[in-house]
Image 1 (cartoon, helix red, strand yellow):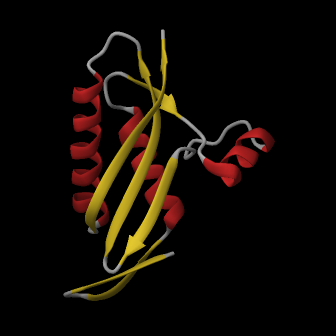
Image 2 (image 1 turned 60 degrees about the horizontal axis):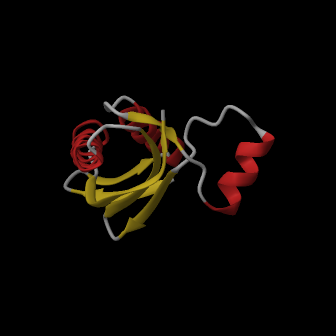
Amino acid sequence: MIKIKNHLGTIGISTAYLRQLISNTAENCFGVAGLNAYGAKQGVYAVLKKENTTKGVIIRQEADELAVDLHITVTYGVNVGAIVDSIIHKVNFVLTEQAGVNVKSVNVFVDEMTN
């Protein structure tokens, strides 16, 4: 649970909801082939449970803002810089508009390229 203070008071938002929202947004960007499991916890979870749609999404709360890390696979032959910029802007917009949270940073790590 992420708790954020704003002009309305304190709001609690489920991390599962935020991970799913970020995952769906990133995967629907042009050129993204998928998200990659990152770290030991996500790696073990990916092995045990084959269908993990939020792998590769790491959320950290810093004061009343969120820092998001995404680990992605991109399609070969596309402009990686444009894809990364698109993901950063879309994730920032979706979190601000749909979840009502301030975003400190969105970091995108390209782990693989695929055909």
